[in-house]
Image (cartoon, rainbow over all chains, first blue to last red; front, side, top):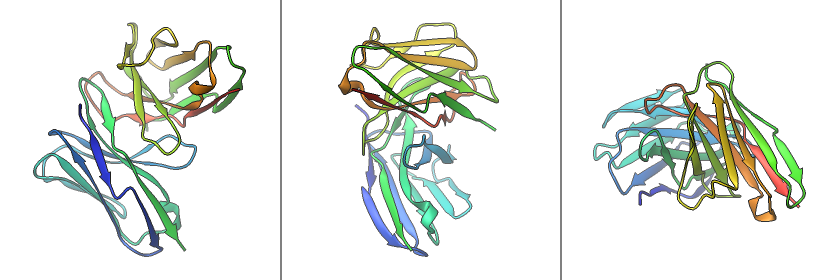
Length: 110
Length: 116
């Protein structure tokens, strides 16, 4: 079945550093979503991508829809402590459904 | 906006009892709602898709008689965990889509279930 692998699994960075993470799929997607989940909370939508090659920003976050349509990237610039959490990518999996990636855990050291 | 609420946020119950979790879309009508389960340090796993006025569609391996889903209105879906056992302890999260066309999902804050 479909799988979404995220890399890296976890990362510890210093406050102020930039962060890059990616998500790869075993099949082609026409939509990519990026979510952030904080401990004990539901995921919150960060960015939605609908077109191959699309580059979309939301404040310090920038996400790109890969040209191959099998990958997507999320960058966070000038990280701050509140960026801590788990970042999930998601893509369509059948009618109306989404499959979620394995997640990237981010910890920011002040 | 697109706000989804869940109730309760936490529940502890004895083994063998049933637990009902509510998911509400507060400022929009949700044709489709989804129920996920998340174990510690793992990703979200879709359990079932709930459409208003029709039977839920369960993912492979999810027992429909154990996890009863009712989507009685365009703003409310409920998940009932029947005869709960310790292995059912998990974080249950619902999400909702605004229309029947595939669209971004908005998540509730989750419900932590602990079965003793």
